[in-house]
Length: 466
Image 1 (tube, rainbow, N blue to C red):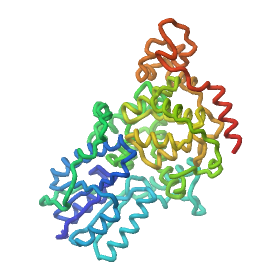
Image 2 (image 1 turned 90 degrees about the vertical axis):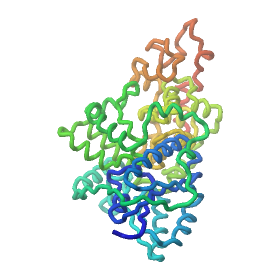
Image 3 (image 1 turned 90 degrees about the horizontal axis):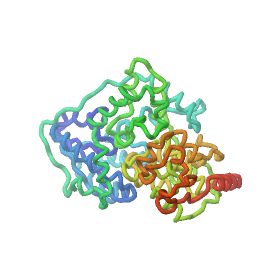
Image 4 (image 1 turned 30 degrees about the vertical axis):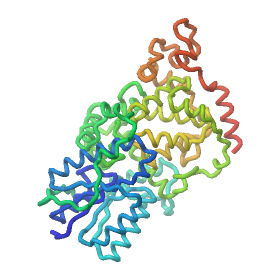
């Protein structure tokens, strides 16, 4: 056992299972301190996630206390300044897990150099991914740009790996503190308390994540391939926020799914979603320009329109298209939105309103509990048609038909747009066709802000220009 203190830098890994860096620290040291660096400006436009982060820190701290490990939250303006002052101490060894984003991986290189020069023991481990970024490439060594061959290769590569021996976390001999001027997790909570409703819907923590995973596998995974398309039922896993904050390692998900003796279409389809996450991480690391702009450069000339009135109507769920409005209100109320509906509202913003996908990406970043740069940016560019392996530009979701197909009885719409509760299924997705004294369009519910057919033609013409 090393006499020095073992420091574990906690990032997106609020778990004990497969938390390789934390496990290593507790194996090597009698005293371990876990620290979280809260960089305010990262979260300045991720309000919803402040709630999840704050709760995760509180829950994780309780569990760590039982193992005689302190969790200390340090507020900092710069990771670099923080580490430059930390290395002066030299009385520690440090461990962390990778975060698969270009800036983080680049910063890791900087840390390696300073720790090496100061002769400080340091070790970095695999993060929350099945494969490392550079392990999955085409035969000629270049990165994949199309999902299907990427996932075929990635899945094969992962399943042929020799499984690593499962290690568990050890209880420390005695508890110690290390950092001065730490902050309370509560300090991170958003100032506006719109998140109060989240507490009825979510319970951020590893135990809950594992329970949710088992429930999903037992009750819903068999029908996942079909069920995932219908927002009026619970057909998806709703595990995405837990994965984002590392309360679940994707390898744990993989193992639990594979244990299911009969591998159904549902299981394969669900694991494909993990595949998309891996693909998106591969994309942002090989093509980092897409984090700030279009993956496909020809879209730099696209004639986007600035229209704050339309943008605000979209954000508030007041577009006059029921399925779009239901999705936007579900997002604001719960910090999550059904995946099928994410495509519908995304397509509506980009193709019906011709508003730049970056505006949608920014709003989702602020409201989504499962926001991650890779999935959010890649998802929005997929919808806009400017991403890798994206939906073709002429694929324009018809919000009326999408509603009628995936919310036949209008249950989803009625849950989130209660002002339409009294409408029959014939009119629930096109209330403007209803002629009824009791229901006044423009008063009880807005007129559509654009007409579908006109907007569609306008979009096709705009896309033809590039």
